Amino acid sequence: MTYKVMVTPRSFGKGNPQPIDMLREKGCELVLNPYGRILNKQEMKELIRDVDAVIVGVDPIDKEILEQAPKLKIISKYGVGTDNIDLVFAKEKGIPVTVTNGANKDAVADYTIALMLAAARRMIPIDHACRQRNWNKVTSVDVWGKTLGLIGLGAIGKGVAARAKGFNMNILAYDLIKDESYETEHQINYVSLEELLTNSDFISLHLPLTKQTHHLIGEKEIGAMKENAVIVNTARGGLINERALLSALQEKRIWGAGLDVFEQEPPQDVGFLELDNLVIGSHCAASTYQAIENMGVMAAENVLEYLRIH
Image (tube, rainbow, N blue to C red; front, side):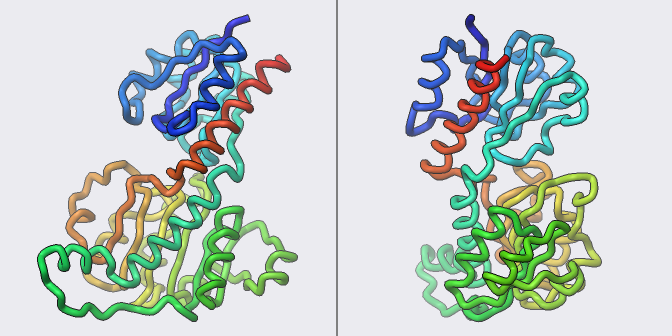
C-alpha cells in the first residue's frame, strides 16, 4: 500500500538524504514543501488534504487545517515543541502526535551558550565596529564563575548546565518537575522563579509554550533581574512578553539578551533590530547537520512505525 507523506521542514533530508530514502524505500509518496519557507494556514490546508501522514516543523496545524485532512493518520513533529499543533483536536480525531526527543538537544545547548557569551561580551557590536576599522576597546561582563538560572531543566536545560559547569558557574533551576537525583549529583539548586530571577547573572529558558507558560517572563519578572543580567531564549518566543523585554533593553535596565525565537518570526517590531545589546538568531539553534539528520531520521521512523502497525 502506498502512503502519501507531507514534509514541511525545509531542512528535512538536507545534507543527508537518509530520511527521504527511508520513506521512499517503504513506498511512501512525498509531498515536499514547495515554498522554501514556513507555510501559512491556507498553504497547509491545500497540501494536507489527501495525505496519510505529515512531518511538520513550526508550520501551523490547528483545527481548521486538521478538518481539511480526512485521511491523516499521524503527525510527526520534527523537533519537540508542539505549540503549533492543536493537540486536543488531534486527540479527538484519533491522530497521534510524535516528537523527536533528544535529537537536537546538544545543538540547542551549544547555541544557548554561544548566545550567552555573545551577549555578555558584546561580540556582535565589537565585530561590526572592527569592520569599520574601529579598534576601540569595549568593556563587557564576565561569564566565568557567575550564576546561571535555568528555567526548565529537561534534556536541553541539563545540556546547558553541563556546559556551564565548564565555566565554573553556580547553577539554579526552576521547574515544576524536579529531578532531585540529578540536582544532588550535579550540584544544582532548585529554587522559586522569583529567587532565580533575583539571583542569576544569566537566565536561560527551556520550557514548552503552554497556556501556563505564555508570557512567563513579563515586566515584573524582568524588573526583578540584576542590572547586569543576560536573558537567553532558545525555546519559544511566547515565553517572554516581548514588549516588556524590548523596553528593558532599550532603557538598558538589563545588560542584554540572546533570542533565537520570537512570537512572530521575523519580529514585527523593528526596535529589536536596532539594539546593540541583543543577539538575534533565526530560530536556528537546532540547525546543525547532525541535529537535522537526527531529527529527520527519528521523524521518518515515527511515521513508518505507526503506518506499519496500523
